[in-house]
Image 1 (cartoon, rainbow, N blue to C red):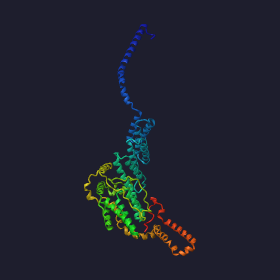
Image 2: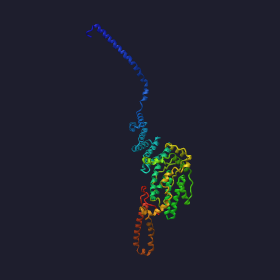
Image 3: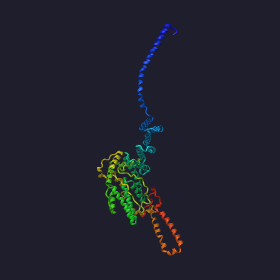
Image 4: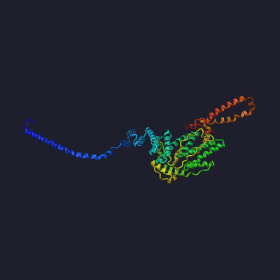
Length: 507
């Protein structure tokens, strides 16, 4: 610029100033549209408040999205954060229940066990919410999913039975009642099948005390069992065998009455069974009245047989698949009738079940179908099982065909011939296995104690001359008799249900 003349430099400076001024004006004009877009922020204050939701709701919604995507760990982290950070949140109960649901949905033994604890904690903290009934139902469902087959550990089935029973008694107005009743029938079918298999094993082994103890409990506790008629027939045959080996007329009449009660129960509650004809013949031969069939029992069996006919599995694939599957088979479980809601009573002992004057089944709970409410419950439970059996009109023509293969394959042929085989085995059993030594020697000590007072009565003079010697001999004899009776007394043995039936029937 030093080389330019002074006048030229002033012109250039003026031009540069004008150029800068024009650039400044264009920049301000370019910013005006941006300013007009920012102005609506003053009126958008309400919209921003609606978009900025509460943090506890954000955590809960995000956890629900994670649950839908089966991201259970992320969902539980968000829910636990909500519980720890916002203890007064309105989403606290929902978060606790969602954590339990996440463990239940994830599955597996450890997760299901944890879900049981979470559901129980929810009931403890929120017992008066409507969701408490759902939590109690889910506790039973968690044990139901962990339930094993009938011939394996039945602890989970017993837990499920207790939880479903608690639900039915604690929440009688819940809409989940029909589903809970059906699940309880399924559980009781598995438990009863386990007891029946043990009873049938002892029955085939001719250990009738153990078999009778199991059958008495099964008949009292599980009236809706699919093979309850066969269990009653086996128990009646055991009582008939006890009648044959008894020598006292009172004992014979007692065992005949108990056998008649079993056969009467078959005629009354299982009128469409194949064993009903055999029970009727035995009642007629004993001179006992033949009862009429219960109309409700007829309807129940017709509906059950119609359901089994419609949902009968393929016999070719049933047993191979049953060996592979870990879940129990509940295809034969009852679809109607009130399940047993009484707690178990462990008073049946194998050492006392066939003693003189022992009581038989009480039959306090009968397999009755529900009345008007039972029909609706049965339809609801069928929908739970994803099945619909509306065709019950043609059930009467095909009643005997459906359940007979399972019953006939187990032991119905052996049942009518049992009295004759039992009498022949009663003398041969001690030589074969030596399992009856405790039953046979029980009679001689009783006769010895009864005849022990006779010698002192015959020798009255000897007693008067030597009173001290006689008293000493009497005490020694009593001590030996007491020791022998204690050894042969069945009541001194263990009455545990795990050790039922160690001995045969005492003649």
